[in-house]
Image 1: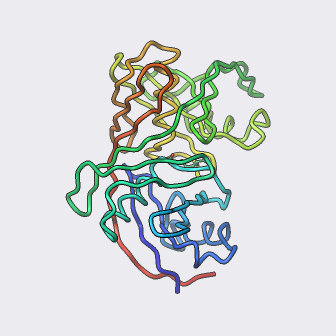
Image 2: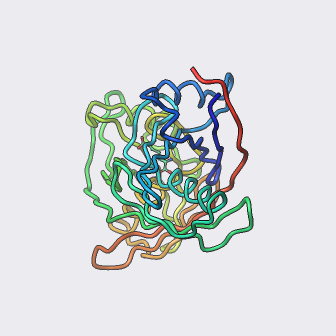
Image 3: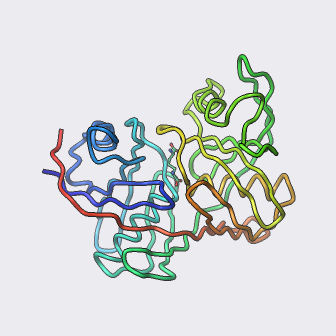
Length: 267
Ligand SMILES: N[C@@H](CCC[C@H](N)C(=O)O)C(=O)O
């Protein structure tokens, strides 16, 4: 049996497993346990490695079994679990996308409000060509993992004659991105508020994304004059962004709710 914790951040849901149970079956476990019809269901698994007391490393596997550098929401979900289970309210977590800090700023168990240091985003304006669609202007943003952000003004986030889900699916696996990419469709409502939709690499449409929130905000701030302190609203709810001037670290604040602990049959 495999012990797991399920936690979600604005509907972007994760299983947390101890690294010690993975025994090199990370991808297979992710594919199996994330299945929504035949298993627990989640957008990904965070494998938590304890390198020593207070020294944690996370490996993130998407629902399709692919490994990602990190997840912003997933990291926050782990921080919520460590706050509940071990009383840790401030910590640094290692990921393949860099170190991420998390600080619990409010707790009404099982709901935690957490501020995360999300590193310094990098953004590059870019027009890509998608076969059957044509030129798609947008921006490549790296926040530890890759994102392609495009702006739209439509009510339903459609762009280039396609729904955001259809266009996101095409861009996500375009050979222009050898490692695939997450895709965000962003509307700037006013300088202090953006709204967006997310097509995630490795799991498709999701209701929220921590790194997607950072990438969308980065592009909106750098290329559309949005405010450095803003609310970014996805289908699963709002999160707060602060990106101080002079290329300092971006900070992300949002909720994480612990859903359940349980045991699953393994592979
Ligand atoms: N939902 C996550 C991002 C998860 C990783 C992503 N699918 C990827 O492959 O890069 C977040 O909250 O950041």
